[in-house]
Length: 141
Image (tube, rainbow, N blue to C red; front, side, top):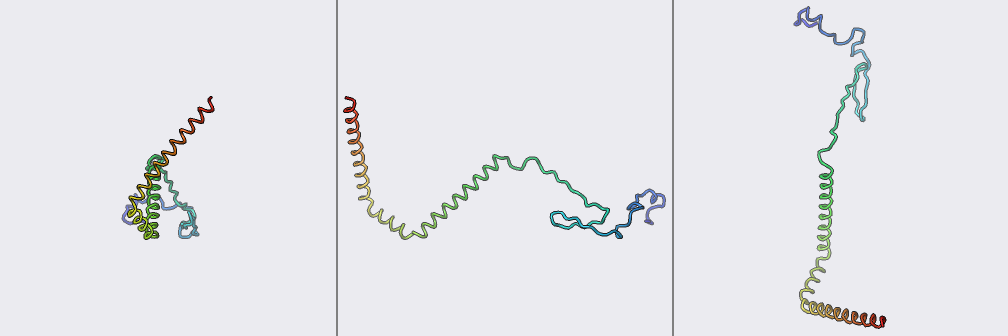
């Protein structure tokens, strides 16, 4: 008994363990495994159960979560496309520069040829429309 506590108060203090129980240091040890981690305790002393209540809703709403996922996916696509363009420039750099040089040097003839092709296509469409109208008028008569 504790000599600092008066005799009268010592009678009212609870006993550390029931009188019929065997002291803890004489009991065989026991081990409880939680998720593969051993927790040692003495038989008769049950390991304390801790119950954690998670919130019903997460920190983000479903719309915010969807927005974040879409933004991340778009950024991934942008990074991949930039990498592809950079790889193309590195691998085909000389050829690409050669093509740009050829097109730049021959821009006027290429432009004239393109304008001529457009005019020719327009003339062909006009002639085909005229032939189609003549054929429909012939079938109506």
